[in-house]
Image 1 (tube, rainbow, N blue to C red):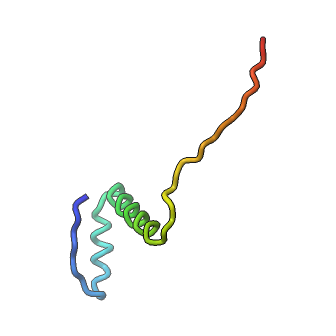
Image 2 (cartoon, rainbow, N blue to C red):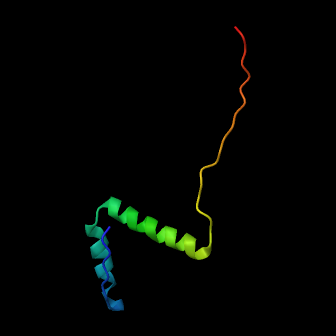
Image 3 (cartoon, one colour):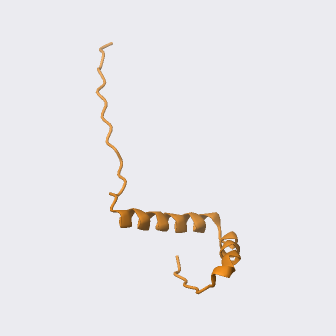
Length: 62
């Protein structure tokens, strides 16, 4: 993802909507994931991890 910085006035809020409406859904999801990761890092939350699941299955002879 290429980093782009633009300076806009508060009155130009429609430009954000126009920009994101031109982006593909995968680009929008990737940007959202970056924002989400930054938020969790800022709040000090741990990285989500997979939970281990263990099942004991009784083997029957037959």
